[in-house]
Length: 255
Image 1 (spheres, one colour):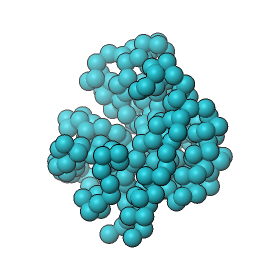
Image 2 (spheres, rainbow, N blue to C red; image 1 turned 45 degrees about the vertical axis):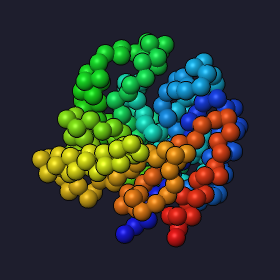
Image 3 (spheres, rainbow, N blue to C red; image 1 turned 135 degrees about the vertical axis):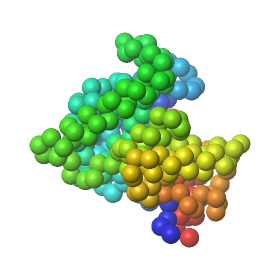
């Protein structure tokens, strides 16, 4: 069995960019496999009007300051950019990184982002339908760009909706990301089984989709229940970005 990759998501809030940059470099030096940010315009917790930075311009910088780690958004909000433009942005960052970019994407949910920046919020179902509409457009544009992506530019879809999201994962994604619920540790396995069922319906081999879980590391440590995953993501908040707990997961990965 392959070792799970260990990913760190730096929440790009409540910190100066120089501090974020230093921690990204440190994470790579520690041996982290993947470094993510997120795609929002305001902090999700803490001071609601605290410091915050934009997703994709930050990823372009990370592509320059790192050499080995994969990078990407966990996840891009489909609503914030024209799908053709998003494909071009992701392709460009992929070139800057030398083929290390992951295109994480979801339908969006943070209403303040929409209201403050003038996007239509609509309903959750409407946003999911828009994502289903735009994913083929993104993939088509990636195939038309000159030059095309350097690497595989895998698509990661985040979410656990059983009727729409998991179907989109089966149809389009290379990686599925969901959160490990400590109060219901069987939830991930149930959702994963439903994803397998969608794969059967759309004619996809479920083994071709990587399974990624966001783990609340402050309440649990590495253990055998996570060994079957392809990827484990640990979220870190600014301004401190304490990487010490990440070392325990790296040691466990390397045992």
